[in-house]
Length: 542
Image 1 (cartoon, rainbow, N blue to C red):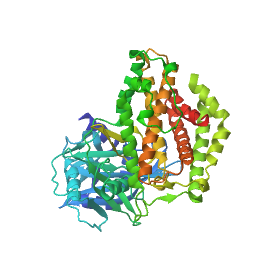
Image 2 (image 1 turned 120 degrees about the vertical axis):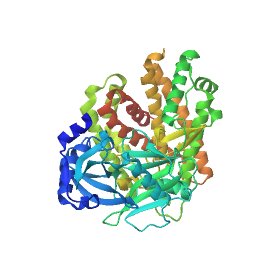
Image 3 (image 1 turned 90 degrees about the vertical axis):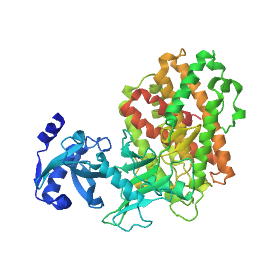
């Protein structure tokens, strides 16, 4: 009972004569709940994204009932205002429980409603709430005109609730597994618009029949006081899998680096290839296949095909304007340059302030970055839309190996929320499909270096030699990916532009991505800053 008493010390029992159904109409309750209780509660939650800022106050932007047959829960949209003069919105469903032994760690407030003592908790902890939500989606009408709109896909017919559990620890959302077959993701950070994950999931699986993403099964949307449609939750099929492609790639790469010693391979004698040159498996020299294994390259080829198929589906729409392809134009160019130059300036300041934390190759590359800052900035400003013939489409937007599941030598792509630092509007801007490819290439680069950093002591070769081998391998992996991807997209008439344009766009996106990564590494783990710095160096010196 220690958990309970410590909570009660901070928050004494709130007493009210209102009923549960009337509770949020009580100004007294709302005032105490928002200022005295939630400010303390919210900053401790994993899904709270404002930890780097100073919380000023919380307002209740919106509340609504999540109910069925007299069973009532509340959904709260909390507006968290920060001292730094911006705000974020969060979704919190609440329930009232009277059982002393229930949810001891997740109590928000001890409360006495009329004569009943109990606790307000996050409703997701309550199986009755999870069951109710499942049943509301399973019995949804085709068109729902109410404030809280439940929707189900034709794939979600005749489903009966059996069980539910938390999926595991997540940073920004909370996912539930139902019947060990379906996943319902509650979005915690809320935007005044449809969530891109909901839009993309529904479009790809319902409209385009793209098989390598979890099927869309249903959703919950809220129509707020300003008549904006806001996504609260997304229901999808659960893909049984062997883990994500990041973990898979780390295991494969560990074998590759172990082979240097096991197969007595001299790194200096390994044949090299040009960066971003399109390859097919037959182009890869036998020494490289012997070193890295054919399986690794076959998997890269499959992932390239799935990525191409995703983009072909996203680029094949001519009715729904949110998904119709667009050409480059002046508006996009201004938006892009403002975004990348602002980010570049921010990272430049971060390098200057953190250069004392670097040594060895990272320090050398950081100095090169500072020496060449004007040419990097100039490179970003050379984006000339009038010379580009390709098309922009809706893309994944945060595509890396951790967003891909591995199952039976195949890959399934998930999590279409977009770049975490971007606004909801920016996440929906149509972009070059090669921006996703660049995200994956940076992820391959990271996987290579992470393998060296994490297992360095188990390899005989020194770090410099391992880095050199890693860079050779990176060229073959990305070359094969590019060769496969371009062939697939061209065969389907997805317009990526001419060859020179493709290389320009890819390098532009790779440079943008590597500079984006720099901020995180310099602030969190400076010894890893060598990875994005090497990525920048590859591009500015190639």
